[in-house]
Amino acid sequence: MNKSQEQTSKVKPVGDDVVLPFSVEGLDVRGRSVRLGAVLDSMLARHDYPVPVKKLLAQATVLTAMLGSTLKFDGRLTLQAQSDGAVSMMVVDFNAPDGLRATASFDEERVSSVAQQEGFKPEDLLGKGHLAFTIDQGAHTSRYQGIVALNGISLEEAAHEYFLKSEQIPTRVRLSVAEVLKADEKGSYNHTWRAGGIMVQFLPQAPERMRAADIHPGDAPEGTPAHFVEEDDAWVEAKSLVDTVKDDEIVDPDLGIEQLLFRLFHERGARVYDPHPMADRCTCSEEKLKKTLRGFPKEDQDELKTQENISITCDFCSQSYTLLTKDVFSEDES
Image (tube, rainbow, N blue to C red):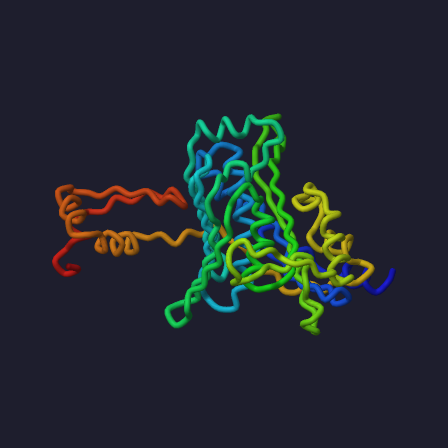
């Protein structure tokens, strides 16, 4: 047993519903691997979405967990897609340190039509529009937003473009989603969802080595072409290794994240760090809803005041609330 194998054998498997940071010093690469099981399944189970929409939302949830877990302080990262496609809107929130929630709006007939087309991929549900990554780390920190144009690209490609344009970091992302059918003791089948992902970023100590094949023109006028620069050999190797991963390996419950990383980088040696647990956690509450309603325009408030109760269902977690109108718009709160 070599040193890398010995180190791997001593690592306690982290299991599901975690983001596991890692580094490969021999390739000047840092990365994160995500595995979502019960958390994702519970998030999707409360929504009566078509299967194609659930697959797309699962991909977006993995990507959001991967990026949100990089926040160094309390805050929120939101992935929001808006398009003219079958899925008109999709929102996934990561609320530090571990909370995930997700929702989508769609045209069911269009979803069915698109999903029946030959060679269908989840990204086909998104038409022309944009994908926004918003980072909010509190009142004393400026909010940051990166926007990527949607025009038939996958969420993996959108992530590549986001990092290239916003942070100038060569990045490779892989995402995978699976439906799992398991037979119970009575012979019935239980349906669950799993998803996972892996991301590597090239971060050499020498800045001149951080170059990608297609360097984005940055703030140059629209239409300015990217220019070709020969890629660093270490980055070429790292990307190539990640591209060898099969989709089913990313979500395989019998293949731990640590084992997957060992398979990929055993020759170079991968170091894993403390895992970040993920949770199915919405931030809605009666008090937040009351505050939102009190912020409505006066004419809308006046209309609501004609009702005895106000019924609201959270788009994220499907929790239903029934509020007494007199409690929402009491004189003490006016």
